[in-house]
Amino acid sequence: MTIEADLPLDRASLHRAYAAGRLRPADVVALIHRRIAAVDDPGIFLHLIPEGRARAAAEVLPAFDPARYPLWGLPVAVKDNIDIAGLPTTVACPGFA
Image (cartoon, rainbow, N blue to C red; front, side, top):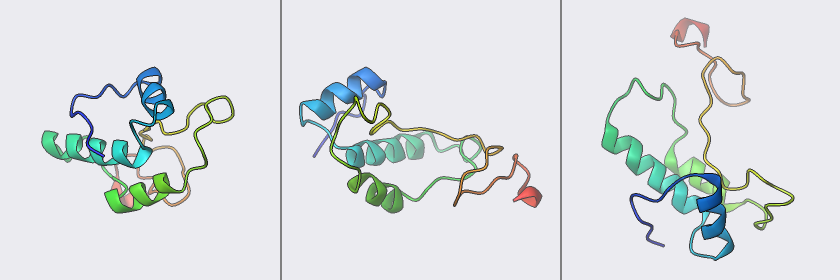
């Protein structure tokens, strides 16, 4: 599925597109990775989940149900001083990883 490069990533816009069947979370993952690559600034994201792994996780989400899963299909960034299983916690200092 091809999506517009300037697609808004706010909750309302994404949920409308998901509900209409015009968009899948895996498409949003691909779009975000393209946007990050276009900026080409390694200082913005110290660790990025590889696109293939993120797309695979998006593909196994349960059916779209915004009442039950209000954050379904929404991209997030996690600051590197928050402990998340499987992600490095570095506080921007590799020695803390």
